[in-house]
Image (cartoon, rainbow, N blue to C red; front, side, top):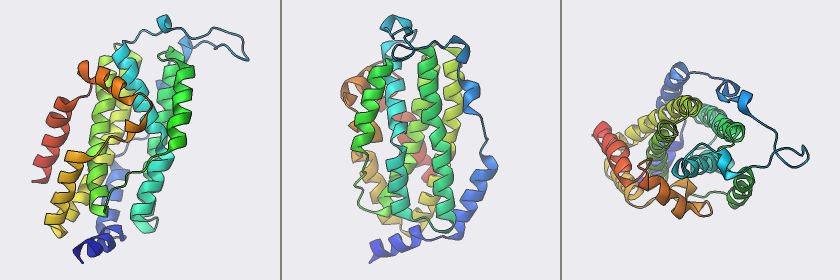
Length: 263
């Protein structure tokens, strides 16, 4: 009975959703992706333009950073599935619908600009990247979370983790333009986390036992949305070994701060 009530309450266009949406729109900073791409260093590729084929020596980035960029980008690429998941979970009416479309519009910039940066900098193999994108997005994403409470907990945790993943790869790339780009993307993810954390905090007030159980389930058992990327485990291991994103980072900067902020 409580579970059904939570579904009704958390999907509804409550005043708290409107309040969180208004706060987000006031706090969000619009930016122009094309201004963060180093177009001046870009060169045509092979193929119809019959130009220079990509070679690994052209990338100035370390292998862990290349792997982190690839994981981050391919994760962002599955936005259509994420939109479907959230719209299905929470509905598209009222403030929820406005939020979901705004969130999708903001997230859509991330994959576009990271790919443009990768191509302009020749940071990663463009042929491998496109092959992986086709395979990953064709497979889609499905969370299989058992309840709306789990979905709220998951997006709260995941948005904070994504914020850190983008920020850390920027700080590790050794490229001023790449660092600026990731430092611009990361705050978007943090604002998204704050919206979902606010909604989860509402759930915690209304359904404390069920909400805490959902958060525990997510922290202990949920996979990253990019886990379905072909070769994900090997790439993630290189990223973890380099300290860009690993369990220690997750524990110190995701799990710990979230639990403190919700206490």
